[in-house]
Image: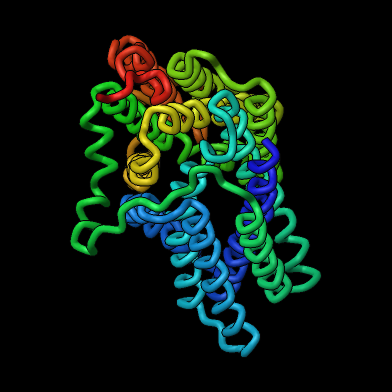
Length: 433
């Protein structure tokens, strides 16, 4: 896995650099107007371009060499941050320019995931795919944990200018590692026309839905994401409500999430993942729902909350790594970028939908009913307790039950459960002709 390790190191540096910049920009946005709306807007600026461009990005990845696609993703980030750095050092940085930079970084990220996921099979043997995917998950968790901590230190000691320089250097290092590493079989696909690009952007979704096993798997994946995000969206306000807005408790729980993600990624890299990937994925989802949602809703205190979320975060790389490995081994190389773009689109579109409903339901339905001891929150009070935050705990419990149920339904469906028989890996399919 030497070649993959070199690429991985470059991507770790870039992910950490981007995490540092994102957290620094949150601080910058809050400093300008001190409104939570500005911070939420930053998240949407990052999410929406990445989600909307994913299908088209996947189609473009299939037309290019994977090395070129990775370089374009890193180059896009370099240009975006470079433009912002120029404006900043000229002393004319405004909030709208921060939004634009974050949106451009989101657009670059739309190319990075399908390009990197498609490149992994060119860098490692099939037996090492889940290990490689585990290391990719570890990289993200390292960035999620280390980025905000490093950003807080750098903003205080050196200001936003130092952060911008560090992120620029991280993109350069990523570009260098991609250029130096050999990728066997890295051939460009058919370029086609611009008109054809629109059709190719939907090809990943069509491919997934044309194969019953992949269709069933992606629908289960979408359902699980939808209900779990619905629950996870209220975890932070639930903790704050139950602790009287104790930020230190929330910080500890968030640190547990990061530590769990790192541990889970390293575990998957060392272990190699479950042999039955669908079963491992679905059991992992059930475990996440039990620990990070059902148990999380019923326990109290910093130790119990941190432990529950840590276990859930530990299982997440196994779930995601298994999903990525299935796509990497069952989808032809010339369509892999489009399919990964479609997977990103399907997985991310659930997040804004779930968040749009969870907040108003918590504020206007579940918390008032919990305070009055009526309705479903009142019925669940023996399990989730009473007082501030108990309505959101009820939402978390319901989300956990629905998520676990969706995973068990996936295991019960033959099209999903027997995917390796119904849709064999590419190296096990009979040769045509």
